[in-house]
Image (cartoon, rainbow, N blue to C red):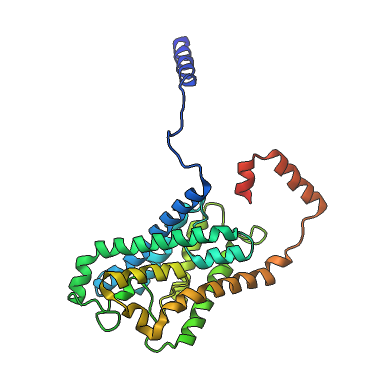
Length: 306
């Protein structure tokens, strides 16, 4: 027994003498870290989402149906939140970033960085899916890359309106869908209401996106995201689909670009006006406890709590 205790003590003393060093190279600049994280999480979300569309379209129903696309985007969003949530917030959506700036939750100077990162991640994801499904796409359409028709494939990458949908109705559709997205996101993050349980935020946000797709997706593919739509659309114009990607649907391309930011501000503002602004204030005793906790808690834990 004595020998065992001595051996344990020797192991502990040896471990104490080990110099634990961090990585030799790391990025200290916050803007660079945020930009890289936002690009990567957007890329992950788009690869799974657009990939699910490519599989359903080229498989002609043999490898999934409309529900598969909803699941692909919903779970893709959840994985994206896991990838960049603690670094950039994993907006993955310019409408979300714009709304956060409007309500003071993100500095306006950060908006160009977020938008560029989301555009880059979305464009790169479109190129990746095009490469992965290149032969499947050409086999499906016979090498004729079209935007409309029975064998249209441009809809794999960007959204297009249903034949019956007018521009006005499509605009309202996008405003309303994005409003519901931001309204529910505000609720999920409201610590004074019923927020998502710690650690469950990615699943909650993914389920929200899937819910919007299931209930509000048939009119125009529920883009509800300017950067998700315009970057792949530009890619398809370059990759062979041509200018029809901008002319189709009576010039539909600008609707997913303009309507979602408006809807985001309206949805978040509605939640704030009807719910968030009316939470009871903390009593003086509770405020004292919060101040005492903030004085004692490490800065990192305070940030996580906020």
